[in-house]
Amino acid sequence: MVARSKKTTWLVKSPMDKSKRIPIIPARQKLFFAVIIAIVIGLYYLASIVTSSSPIRLVDGIPHIFSFVFDDLIPPNWSYYNRVLPPLLETWNIAFLSTTVAVIFCLPISFLAAGNINKKTWLYQIVRLALNVLRTIPDMILAVIFVAMVGIGALAGVYALFFFSLGILVKLISETVEAIDPGPLEAIRATGGNIFQIIWFGAMPQILPQYVSYSLYVLEINVRASLVLGFVGAGGIGLILRQQMSMFNYGNIAMIIFITFIAVTIIDTVSTSLRKRLV
Amino acid sequence: MIEFRNVSLTYPNGHQGLKNIDLKINEGEFVVIVGLSGAGKSTLIRSINQMVKPTQGELFIDGENTLKFSDRKLRKFRRNIGMIFQNYNLVKRSSVLRNVLAGRLGHTGTLRSILSLFPQDDVQLALHSLERVGIAEKAYIRADQLSGGQQQRVSIARALTQKPKLILADEPVASLDPPTAHAVMKDLQRINKEDSITMVVNLHAIDLSMQYAERIIGLRNGEVVFDGPASSVSEKTFEDIYGRPIKEDDLVGEVSNG
Image (cartoon, rainbow over all chains, first blue to last red; front, side, top):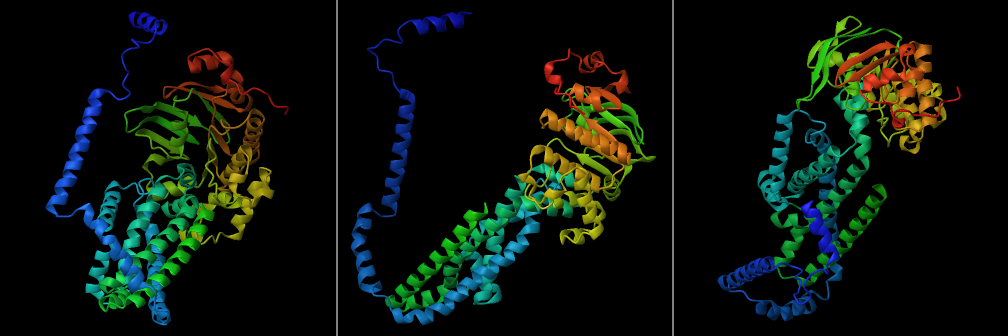
């Protein structure tokens, strides 16, 4: 009762003393943010002293960038295209093959990594843990490992990208599986269907659009990733890119970058427009 | 024949869904289970095909204690029990025919079913089931293109395709408008009469229960509080089962013209 009468009088009376400013952010909070910002700026300053870097050096570097682009890279060595296309095709083949194999293998693993399908908690946890470990390894490190294991060449790249895309795909698809409508699964279980039939008839139709879309998405990622894998010897266009860089053939490098840019843009555009129609 | 012998079910969270149920349901009966939401209707019906597993007691179906079944045997046993859900539980992105064919999965090998190599007899049976519920012409349409009443008919067709001895229906008409609800109840009644398939149906609408049931079982707090022929039931009986006066919401209304 007391609280209520208080509220009423507050409403009836004029809001507050007009001479006093009403703060939008309380003073204590303002001070708190000010201290945090001061600490962050201090840390940046400290870091720039320790590493003896300064924004001025970044600004000083800009003319060098321009001179590199306009004096060294331009004009590209147009006639070099016939040396660029075969490794570019190899790059595409690495990306496409590794994605395809990963797309097939990711399905069973995704269902094992989905809590609504795989009810065996211990198995679910093991699969999840293994995938988390796999995903912490960057693609370049995977490539280095497989170059050491199977030798320099495209095969190492295929292996590296296979495991790399498996990690991403299983993560994306298992989470899609966990979000599906459980009703159809229940209905198929009630007809006496076994777990494979529950997955195939109840779950697969529900995830199909996302499954295809994620597969295309991972193909896009793999095309870009496979460009640089050649730097560590895993085949494709990165191999000749590193070669030409070590010989300072800037005209050839410009041509490699130019053709790669066009190829990646085409692949991305096609894949994106396909994915838009799917979901 | 279904026989519950002192069956109880406690959920992992400690909630007791069923308490010492003793029941007999005879072959060919049309039984309606009534009770407020949370009374244990769903738990009772799902215990029969063990979509939830009772934690105590014995559940005899055709003379066998089904609670002792292995996973494999349980799947085989479920083939003979059709189930109909409130939300139809169709695979919305699949065709009507494919949804109905799911009723044959228990009879089809894993590889065969995954490759969609259903025997032609099964496909014909599926189409015939669709004919019986009056939507054969929708066979190749995606399930999500149909209205609620049509979707529920697809799920009835799916159950029929199992050639079941028993159909369990968990609130089959709760999501439908009154005329459609009556039409679907009539379908169930007709199937019960024509194929002498035992029907166990959960309902909460009083008028529907009185109109379609042969026998009514009342549940409250997981216990059977009423069991008798529908002819002996009055609104007073429902007030006893629900433990409160009858309200307008307890009726579907719009008594059908059939």
